[in-house]
Amino acid sequence: MKIHKFLSIAMLGLLLWASCIQAKEETTEETTEETTEETTEETTEETTEETTEDAEETTEPPKKEKTTEIEEEKDVMVLHINNFERALSENQYLLVEFYAPWCGHCRELEPIYAEAAEKLKKEEPPLRLAKVDAIEEKEISDEFDVGSFPTLKLFLNGDRKHPIDFTGKRTVAGIMQWMKRRTGPGAPDLDSVNAAAQFIDSHNITVVGFFDSLDSDAAKVFREVTLEMAETEFALTATPDVFQKYEVKGSVVVLFKKFDDGREDFTLSEDGTLDKSNLTTFIKQNSLELMIPFSEETAEKIFTSSIHLHSLLFINSTVESQKALVDESRTVAKEYKGKMLFIVIDVTEAISQVLNYFGVSEKDAPTARVIDMDSGKKFTIASGDLTVKSLQQLCQEVVEGSAKPYYKSEDVPEDWDKGPVKVLVGKNFESVALDPTKNVFVEFYAPWCGHCKNLAPIWEELGEKYADHEDIIIAKMDATANEMESLKVEGFPTIKYFPAGGKEVIDYQGQRDLETFSKFLDGGGVLPEEKSDEDEDDEEDDDDDSEEVDESDNVSANNTSRDEL
Image (cartoon, rainbow, N blue to C red; front, side, top):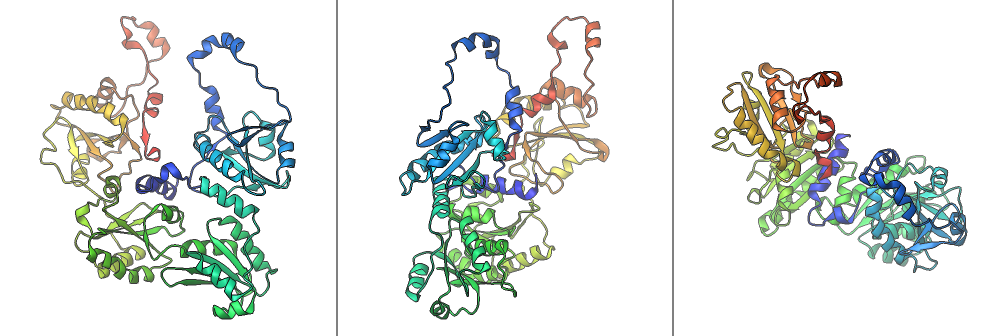
């Protein structure tokens, strides 16, 4: 997984706090969809119920015969091979979800999709939603090249050959906005100064295309963009009086906004062509404020921005001087516009996980952090040192590549080495774990991780067992509160063995029990090879200790990755 994608997911999990965005929204581009390959895993699972399979077959109700009749579940039409064509012919606008019964994303979408279906059904003309079980109806899913779940496609006027891929948000509002934009009259023509003024004044952000001709190639590209960006209000004009009113010369796209400078102009290329991708990026970047207050509305725009340097200002909104500092910092934000986003986080509203992630406490405000979403590196200003000048200097050093990354660390506990399990933090990690005279076995854990909690008593027992071994140290580190430049932890618990003499670090992959841990340590960081069946047959079967366990399967099933947050 690419670092930027990983960070976006991790950051969304940690930062979309107050708005509960995880429960409400799912970013279409960044979310990893479940592919049809998962059918392999699902179909290979066996349950104890299979032992009575024959008996169950006799009690299962017979499947309904598939006819051309169309049934509905919560206003969503249920389609299959026999009624699909009828649904297309009877509905001018039909959005179809291709799903798999085992798909988690599909299950999450189900109530959202049903609510949107109920509301869109009441539109005039009705905008209908339907679904197809792509696993059972393989012939249909193959026809439309369905390769991931859920896949949504819009069919217009019964056209089976050219469905339109859904590109909106998978929320009730997102589905409704996208459907209305795709089936509506399109961007209005502002044919008078009054019409233009009324349109621009009615919205916080509007995008108006000024074209010499509304039939030009550039105007056609503009209309294509309006269909993709359903949350933005668009209009076009070729009226000279409107050009004059807004001091526009030639073909230009203008983004009007009720904040910052009020407007941003996008000039077409010298040959008069309009690039769809460049215009989309221009609209996304300039729809954000210079100083972006973090909220549900701005979250997705921040994390899907093409700008991957983010400057975070942590302030206490109840302190007037700190609010004033945000206004003063606008000059820095303007200087680095297009290079860095400036995001304001109120410490009185942020939950503890957010502050912990960036190593910030409420008393640190005002302070700043800069994060590079590509590399994951974070940069900081010392508490109490945040000024416009220090912020500008930090931003300049980050852009130039001369800034030193910041790695958070708890303070070293006074009794860190008193117990059988030594406590490591960022500040003492290298001096202990990389001690050339010691073999150090470290568990990297998260306080909230269930697997880590289950391991805790075993790890403590392991520490007691090796307490008298001068060359072996059993240690642990809270990897959510401490970071190391040389080590990235992406799952919990992560267990690593740091051999004496500066040898290569070993990732522990064995079973997590006292006996296996002990064998690993006694073997100098190597687990003994498992005995073959022939060897086992030669041994006396005195007890159950001779049974072998597939350790790799056990470990993989008991790991919590950061992506699961």
